[in-house]
Length: 418
Image 1 (spheres, one colour):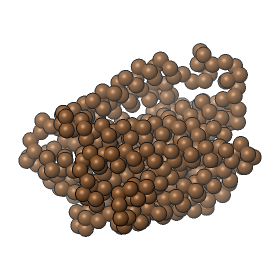
Image 2 (tube, helix red, strand yellow; image 1 turned 180 degrees about the vertical axis):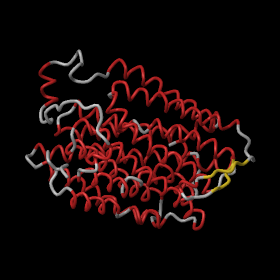
Image 3 (cartoon, one colour; image 1 turned 90 degrees about the vertical axis):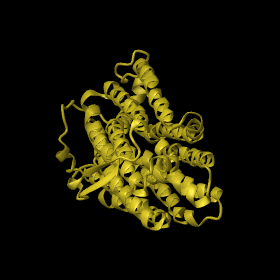
Image 4 (cartoon, one colour; image 1 turned 120 degrees about the horizontal axis):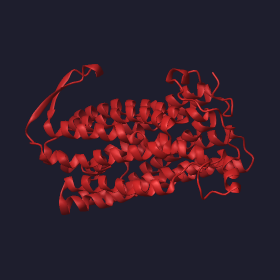
């Protein structure tokens, strides 16, 4: 989030163009795509207890490494060749290359987060509580995203931009200590009673014989995987618009200073934080009232998809309050959508394949997001307008839900079958 908030000052100080910034943002997303893919495999192979702290350690180091780019000369350039992406060779400032390198390291390591987190939820919660649990932990990402826009402009003013990366990178190390002390699987947790363990297992599929590996190609035998991948391609990249471009949009559209941009960005994330909890609560509440798993999940997804539609009007709003309210509603809906979509995987797939499927979906979502970010950079470089970007985002969730319904007309224990 620091990158999005400091886009303006960094671009001015380091002489970045719109496409330079797009290369940096896209580099993270391409790397995060592969990190998501292999992070899911890692969590399935070595477990969440060891896999997640390894990922956090590496991404904390990578986050702090962004600050080292301050040591690079501003006016030097480097030529990059990305023929494997059919982009050919292009020249970027050396500072852009440095940020791209740090973002790639960050993305590769950070990709293990959500596959590990979803696996932990599948281990610790019965089916009826998974979406709410997912919404709660996903709200944690928004707590950081709320604090970040308030803190970063003030840290930047006091100490400069390198310090913001050093400080936020160092915070991840503190988390490691708590994780090793607190986390264990339900079967091994020493402070878990038999009654609590039985409750956790309630409604969960029977434990299957462990497997050393679930081949990636075998996953494509399941309709649920195709549905999840399609939703990742269409709706997944939308969140990156908020993360990488919303502060820039607010600054340019309303001529705000950096502190005001940070404050309004924090309001956006505050609004968005309620969506994951509300979306998870909605499906869980419907299940508790006797609704089928299929009806509860899909109604929750439909409500979220409809709440995104008004975002097309955000660039035409007369003031920043209404703009942030509309975009915040869409961001909140995205979080509720994600909570139920992540739970859709654990609803339909064998337990030993959950992290692999989540990783696969994240791979396609963020790889697509990298391409979309490059396109956004070109649009902004040529037009300077966000209107077409928000218009495209407004209908992508409804299109995703239509594909889910087509491929998986009924969510249930056998919904994943080919």
